[in-house]
Length: 637
Image (cartoon, rainbow, N blue to C red):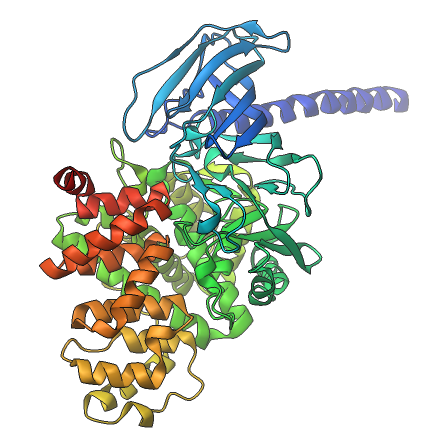
């Protein structure tokens, strides 16, 4: 009897052991199929048939020709009946394509180009094809690549190159499946001119070598928009055990000070929502033409020099890019219609990091400023008959996904998550978010899947009755719900009192501005009334030095006031700022305000003619349309 029982248990154990690999296989297949099922309207890729799993990139950077020549070897995974691999490209010169390690010549076709999406590259394959090798070079005006002459850099002595791949610009420098719903690992070998350092969104060198050849490895799977490359005369400065900053030599000391709390930020983020899973977290301070505040490239955030205020007052942007290491990089929006899943979560996470480091009063000032921007943008979009784009879930098919980069995704998304937190309680909401990032790590997320997980893992579990109608109002309806959270800042209430005193005749020098933060100054400038005359603006400027401030956020707000009030003493600074700053967040409102008068429009056109060569495509694409630049150029010629 005991012997029979022993054999029975042995059979069960063997059976269980045999089932385990099969179970793991099914889990792997389920994970793989999850990635392959994404239907992205902004990519030609057909991942159900063939999907890229790894990129090996060997490239040479040529500053004289302003191009990159490269070999992209793509490791692919195919369906049983696969006949073709479709890649996204834009203005790439394809020299040849081969299959496999033995480099058999492939049959391929470059399809018709569209302005936004570029051209499909269709390569004939077989189901057992494992590798595809694409030999190519980039166009000299590739949209992702910004080639800077020495005079356009801080040091003025070496050229500089950086990429900006979001949203769908990776295809202009790498033939790839350029969809946020497709993740792959990559390795690279990049040759650059001697004396320059190459960096990527991967494990990076920390100093230059003699031959100018640098190797990179990214073992965690990323979507194509997180591919990044920078080449320049930059130095490395360590901040903490896993944090550092890269910058041009003339900027490096200031950058190291500005980001001195970087290690504490990473620790604060981990305490909130789990381990940082990317190894190192470094920052690269780019030249001023960079079109964004920051770009969350894994392991190496690209940052604008406009946050180098000298007093660490603008480092919430760094908290934002760090937060992307969880929301966006770790759990990624499946398509650009789901962009709020990246940015709304990131703003929420950013606010929580800032609250933990500097207190609730501080984070509420940030939230209040963002709420001001959000309400203004919603009103503007309504006036432009564009109210449907104030929904969180967008419909961008047939349009450039860049049109979805508004404060809706960021700040309405944040308010929705804050609403959920207030309804269920912070402790329960934090538990849900921590599990959300853990369970969905290195995967993609649709809005509908998020709603499902929210319902099952939070609302049902905690028996919270928010209701389907309310959630759908937030996500699928335009504008803000009536019961949206309203950030409250006592510090801003005091600022409002000082503004009122000034309006009623109190001299600027007698206002109580003791120990104001840059956020209080920003609010002060923003709420100045239209009725102020130039004498009173001059008084403010002489007392507080707004035109000469080193804080770019306050300066931009002051320059807006200068345009509205025709305050000529600031016009020289306005021109200098627009010519030397490429950050689109600043450019769009300033040019927009200038366009409201004929004199302002003329000024805007004259400035833009000087400034345009300094801007990245992301910025010129927006400002060209605002100024109707194509027609302006024809008229001038």
